[in-house]
Length: 192
Ligand code: ATP
Ligand code: MG
Image 1: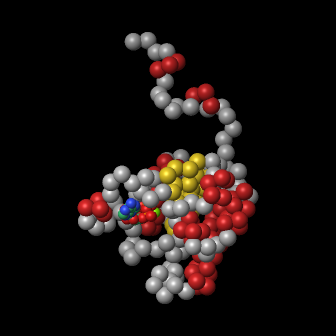
Image 2 (image 1 turned 45 degrees about the vertical axis):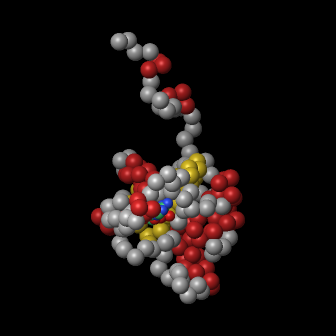
Protein backbone atom coordinates (compact mmCIF):
# COMPACT_ATOMS: atom_id res chain seq x y z
CA UNK A 1 0.00 0.00 0.00
CA UNK A 2 1.29 3.45 -0.81
CA UNK A 3 1.20 6.13 1.82
CA UNK A 4 -0.69 9.34 1.15
CA UNK A 5 -0.84 12.45 3.31
CA UNK A 6 -4.44 11.53 4.11
CA UNK A 7 -3.20 8.41 5.90
CA UNK A 8 -1.86 10.38 8.79
CA UNK A 9 -3.09 9.54 12.24
CA UNK A 10 -6.13 11.50 13.37
CA UNK A 11 -5.39 14.42 15.65
CA UNK A 12 -1.71 14.42 14.73
CA UNK A 13 -1.93 18.18 14.18
CA UNK A 14 0.67 18.00 11.41
CA UNK A 15 -0.52 21.23 9.88
CA UNK A 16 -0.25 23.15 13.11
CA UNK A 17 3.01 21.63 14.30
CA UNK A 18 4.94 24.79 13.51
CA UNK A 19 2.53 27.10 15.35
CA UNK A 20 3.92 28.90 18.40
CA UNK A 21 3.85 26.83 21.58
CA UNK A 22 2.59 28.23 24.82
CA UNK A 23 1.80 27.00 28.27
CA UNK A 24 -1.89 26.16 28.55
CA UNK A 25 -4.48 26.61 31.25
CA UNK A 26 -6.47 23.38 31.39
CA UNK A 27 -9.50 22.54 33.53
CA UNK A 28 -10.98 19.15 34.34
CA UNK A 29 -14.38 19.59 35.91
CA UNK A 30 -17.79 17.86 36.10
CA UNK A 31 -19.45 15.26 38.30
CA UNK A 32 -17.93 12.11 36.81
CA UNK A 33 -14.75 10.35 37.92
CA UNK A 34 -11.49 11.14 36.19
CA UNK A 35 -10.53 14.74 36.95
CA UNK A 36 -7.51 14.08 39.15
CA UNK A 37 -6.76 10.96 37.10
CA UNK A 38 -6.56 13.08 33.92
CA UNK A 39 -4.24 15.58 35.61
CA UNK A 40 -1.97 12.73 36.74
CA UNK A 41 -2.05 11.28 33.22
CA UNK A 42 -0.68 14.56 31.86
CA UNK A 43 1.92 14.60 34.62
CA UNK A 44 3.06 11.14 33.52
CA UNK A 45 3.35 12.34 29.94
CA UNK A 46 5.29 15.46 30.98
CA UNK A 47 7.70 13.39 33.09
CA UNK A 48 8.59 11.53 29.90
CA UNK A 49 10.16 14.78 28.66
CA UNK A 50 11.99 15.20 31.97
CA UNK A 51 9.81 18.19 32.74
CA UNK A 52 9.45 18.92 36.41
CA UNK A 53 5.90 18.79 37.77
CA UNK A 54 4.31 20.25 40.92
CA UNK A 55 0.97 19.18 42.34
CA UNK A 56 -0.72 21.25 45.06
CA UNK A 57 -3.69 19.47 46.62
CA UNK A 58 -6.37 21.57 48.29
CA UNK A 59 -8.26 18.61 49.74
CA UNK A 60 -6.70 15.98 51.91
CA UNK A 61 -8.54 12.68 52.12
CA UNK A 62 -8.52 10.10 54.89
CA UNK A 63 -5.88 7.93 53.30
CA UNK A 64 -2.50 8.51 51.77
CA UNK A 65 -3.14 8.11 48.06
CA UNK A 66 -1.18 6.23 45.43
CA UNK A 67 -0.18 9.57 43.91
CA UNK A 68 1.12 10.78 47.29
CA UNK A 69 3.28 7.65 47.53
CA UNK A 70 4.51 8.09 43.94
CA UNK A 71 5.35 11.78 44.52
CA UNK A 72 7.53 10.71 47.45
CA UNK A 73 9.35 8.24 45.20
CA UNK A 74 9.75 10.76 42.39
CA UNK A 75 10.67 13.75 44.53
CA UNK A 76 12.45 16.39 42.45
CA UNK A 77 10.68 15.20 39.31
CA UNK A 78 7.12 15.48 40.57
CA UNK A 79 6.72 17.37 43.83
CA UNK A 80 3.46 16.92 45.73
CA UNK A 81 2.25 19.47 48.27
CA UNK A 82 -0.74 18.37 50.35
CA UNK A 83 -2.21 21.58 51.71
CA UNK A 84 -5.67 20.39 52.72
CA UNK A 85 -4.96 19.84 56.40
CA UNK A 86 -7.15 22.14 58.47
CA UNK A 87 -10.46 22.39 56.59
CA UNK A 88 -13.32 22.18 59.07
CA UNK A 89 -15.74 19.76 57.41
CA UNK A 90 -17.89 19.23 60.45
CA UNK A 91 -17.51 22.33 62.60
CA UNK A 92 -17.77 24.66 59.57
CA UNK A 93 -15.38 27.35 60.77
CA UNK A 94 -15.41 29.72 57.77
CA UNK A 95 -12.49 31.92 58.93
CA UNK A 96 -10.33 28.87 59.45
CA UNK A 97 -11.24 27.43 56.04
CA UNK A 98 -10.39 30.75 54.39
CA UNK A 99 -6.99 30.70 56.12
CA UNK A 100 -6.35 27.09 55.04
CA UNK A 101 -7.34 27.88 51.44
CA UNK A 102 -5.12 30.97 51.44
CA UNK A 103 -2.12 28.97 52.64
CA UNK A 104 -2.66 26.43 49.86
CA UNK A 105 -3.08 29.20 47.28
CA UNK A 106 0.21 30.76 48.41
CA UNK A 107 1.88 27.44 47.68
CA UNK A 108 0.27 27.53 44.23
CA UNK A 109 1.73 31.01 43.62
CA UNK A 110 5.14 29.80 44.75
CA UNK A 111 5.22 26.86 42.31
CA UNK A 112 3.67 28.95 39.53
CA UNK A 113 6.49 31.50 39.78
CA UNK A 114 9.13 28.78 39.95
CA UNK A 115 10.03 28.27 36.30
CA UNK A 116 11.69 24.94 37.01
CA UNK A 117 8.13 23.57 36.95
CA UNK A 118 6.80 23.13 33.41
CA UNK A 119 3.52 21.63 34.63
CA UNK A 120 1.66 22.66 37.77
CA UNK A 121 -1.51 20.97 39.03
CA UNK A 122 -3.90 22.74 41.39
CA UNK A 123 -6.02 19.80 42.49
CA UNK A 124 -9.50 20.77 43.76
CA UNK A 125 -8.90 24.51 43.48
CA UNK A 126 -12.45 24.71 42.07
CA UNK A 127 -13.80 23.35 45.32
CA UNK A 128 -12.45 26.19 47.47
CA UNK A 129 -13.67 28.73 44.92
CA UNK A 130 -17.16 27.26 45.04
CA UNK A 131 -17.28 27.88 48.78
CA UNK A 132 -15.87 31.40 48.42
CA UNK A 133 -12.80 30.61 50.46
CA UNK A 134 -10.78 32.56 47.88
CA UNK A 135 -11.82 35.35 45.48
CA UNK A 136 -11.82 34.04 41.90
CA UNK A 137 -10.57 37.41 40.54
CA UNK A 138 -7.33 36.95 42.43
CA UNK A 139 -6.80 33.52 40.87
CA UNK A 140 -7.59 34.84 37.37
CA UNK A 141 -5.10 37.73 37.79
CA UNK A 142 -2.33 35.39 38.96
CA UNK A 143 -2.94 32.97 36.07
CA UNK A 144 -2.76 35.84 33.59
CA UNK A 145 0.75 36.61 34.93
CA UNK A 146 1.99 33.01 34.79
CA UNK A 147 5.31 32.23 33.04
CA UNK A 148 4.62 31.77 29.31
CA UNK A 149 5.79 28.15 29.07
CA UNK A 150 4.13 26.82 32.21
CA UNK A 151 1.13 24.51 31.76
CA UNK A 152 -1.46 24.82 34.53
CA UNK A 153 -4.03 22.12 35.28
CA UNK A 154 -6.97 22.88 37.58
CA UNK A 155 -9.38 20.21 38.78
CA UNK A 156 -12.61 19.99 40.73
CA UNK A 157 -16.36 20.04 40.22
CA UNK A 158 -18.14 23.31 39.44
CA UNK A 159 -15.35 25.27 37.77
CA UNK A 160 -16.33 28.95 38.01
CA UNK A 161 -17.33 30.77 34.79
CA UNK A 162 -14.39 33.20 35.15
CA UNK A 163 -11.86 30.34 35.03
CA UNK A 164 -13.64 28.63 32.14
CA UNK A 165 -13.47 31.90 30.23
CA UNK A 166 -9.73 32.23 30.85
CA UNK A 167 -8.79 28.58 30.17
CA UNK A 168 -7.49 27.21 26.87
CA UNK A 169 -8.98 23.77 27.47
CA UNK A 170 -11.95 22.69 29.57
CA UNK A 171 -13.17 19.11 29.79
CA UNK A 172 -16.25 18.08 31.73
CA UNK A 173 -16.28 14.55 33.14
CA UNK A 174 -19.80 13.17 32.87
CA UNK A 175 -20.84 10.16 34.88
CA UNK A 176 -22.44 7.38 32.88
CA UNK A 177 -21.75 4.65 35.45
CA UNK A 178 -19.82 4.60 38.70
CA UNK A 179 -19.28 1.52 40.92
CA UNK A 180 -20.31 3.65 43.90
CA UNK A 181 -23.91 3.40 42.64
CA UNK A 182 -23.72 -0.41 42.92
CA UNK A 183 -22.57 -0.07 46.51
CA UNK A 184 -18.85 -0.61 45.86
CA UNK A 185 -16.46 1.27 48.06
CA UNK A 186 -13.50 3.38 46.96
CA UNK A 187 -10.54 1.16 46.08
CA UNK A 188 -6.77 1.65 46.44
CA UNK A 189 -5.02 2.06 43.12
CA UNK A 190 -8.26 3.19 41.50
CA UNK A 191 -9.85 5.84 43.68
CA UNK A 192 -6.93 6.82 45.93
P1 ATP B 1 -10.34 10.63 40.47
O1 ATP B 1 -9.39 11.13 41.53
O2 ATP B 1 -10.67 9.20 40.69
O3 ATP B 1 -9.93 10.98 39.09
P2 ATP B 1 -12.11 12.88 40.48
O4 ATP B 1 -10.91 13.72 40.71
O5 ATP B 1 -12.80 13.03 39.17
O6 ATP B 1 -11.75 11.37 40.73
P3 ATP B 1 -13.22 13.85 42.96
O7 ATP B 1 -14.40 14.77 43.01
O8 ATP B 1 -11.88 14.42 43.27
O9 ATP B 1 -13.24 13.11 41.54
O10 ATP B 1 -13.54 12.62 43.91
C1 ATP B 1 -12.57 11.73 44.28
C2 ATP B 1 -13.18 10.44 44.77
O11 ATP B 1 -14.57 10.36 44.54
C3 ATP B 1 -12.61 9.23 44.03
O12 ATP B 1 -12.55 8.19 44.97
C4 ATP B 1 -13.62 8.94 42.98
O13 ATP B 1 -13.68 7.59 42.55
C5 ATP B 1 -14.90 9.33 43.65
N1 ATP B 1 -15.87 9.77 42.65
C6 ATP B 1 -15.62 10.52 41.56
N2 ATP B 1 -16.75 10.69 40.83
C7 ATP B 1 -17.73 10.03 41.49
C8 ATP B 1 -19.13 9.81 41.28
N3 ATP B 1 -19.72 10.32 40.21
N4 ATP B 1 -19.81 9.08 42.19
C9 ATP B 1 -19.19 8.57 43.27
N5 ATP B 1 -17.88 8.74 43.55
C10 ATP B 1 -17.15 9.45 42.66
MG1 MG C 1 -10.13 14.76 42.29
